[in-house]
Amino acid sequence: MRGAEPRIGQERWVLVYEYTPQRAQKASGTRIDIGGTLDIGREGMLALGVEVWSEGISRKAVVVTATESGWEVSVPNRHGAVLHPWGQAPRKMSATEHVSWPRAAIRVLNAEPVDKPGGTHHWVLLEADRLPITKAGPSPARNTTTITFTPPPPTPLTEKQDAALRHVFAELLAWPPRLPAKPRTLEATGRHLGGVTEEAIRERLRPVRDRALRLGLADRVGLTDPQYLYWLVENGFVTPPHGTDHRVQLPWLE
Image (cartoon, rainbow, N blue to C red; front, side):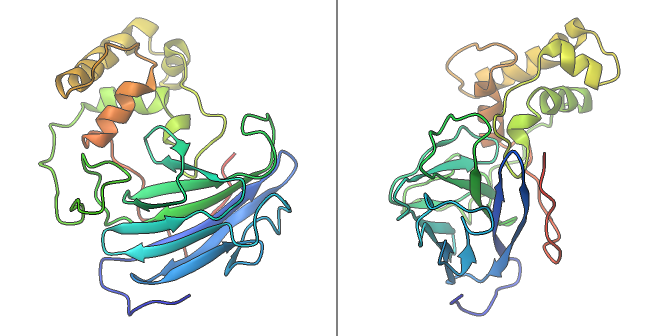
């Protein structure tokens, strides 16, 4: 890894995380300084597609550079990759782009169909607690300032509202990401919260969704539709995970 001396408060981590239905490889990786670059792939500084073997992963599949305002990510992998910003909808990545988000995962594709059930998964995890969530989004324009802009703190959700939201969308808020990830039903959420009725969950979530509408969400979606979750995350109402201890390997999350 190449890079300048680390700066206080700017610690970054890059990890690889792989699994199949039969085998889970623990996540592992390294701290990276601002200005440092890592090649990731079957012959990269961080190996991907080796322990959980896949010829569909290129020898150099992803190149990551830590920048002052986020990450510069190049994807030479011949099958491409999908970006999964924490708390946001996933999307196919371009060949090179800037990513600025506290938690962002890159699903590196192999020769398998993207929607194949029970397939082999290869992930690169980008972690940077000091990167803020801003309205510029996970992939801001190069001339957008994200590191110095901090939006005013929103009026927080109530404890019961926050718990209901996080339980309904638990799989979509998991870190590392889960696949497949889908919302729980309101009935199942009530059971997870200790026998709360479905109507009580509705009463907790209606004002949460209405807040997203007041913030500019275009459509009045259903209470288990993740569109209003994404909007609330983007506006600072749902906080990302942080402070993981990388001195030991992270456990694989089932």
